[in-house]
Image (cartoon, rainbow, N blue to C red):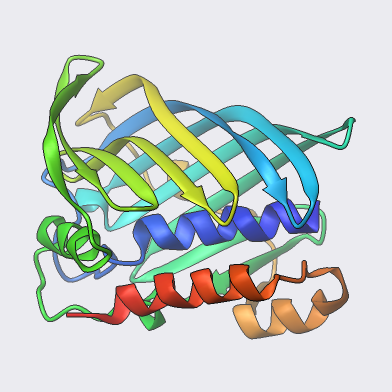
Length: 235
């Protein structure tokens, strides 16, 4: 299960790394509450996995503060596991709640991507272009018009910068998210965006504490990850 948590963090960082600066608007929508279905799976280091679940996103202040609540069921080699994860984006940082260890791990995705532009809707598109992607069209999700952007690994459906659908295939793992209930300009309070009262660890501290449980990448997977991380730092 530690392996699945790690890959969940990887997907989170990839999707938000280019759109985290608190001094400007991430979205063209002030607030919202969105519910999603989540599916995924594949061959992870020789282990067959299947994932399904739900996710709920709440955001305020034009997306500068955003909370994701995820509940998933994972089938790993015939064994069923149930997990929940809460992720918060605030002031350019990502906080991931580990309910098993009762800690909050703080990630700094700005190390993955530096952009000279302050318009976050544009910078997310910069990320896609830097990764060799392009806009391929427009589609409607739940009645909301979306721009569709595609890279070799990720496909995104964005409505005014807000993610309504995503598909990813990274190192043999597929992951898809699609909005099923969308309520934009909804009332979202500070209380709605609170995290549990757990101590906060840095990414380095968490990796040190859980080093023995970290999955080992093959050389090919390590190379693919390095190439993807390089693309975030291109301007």
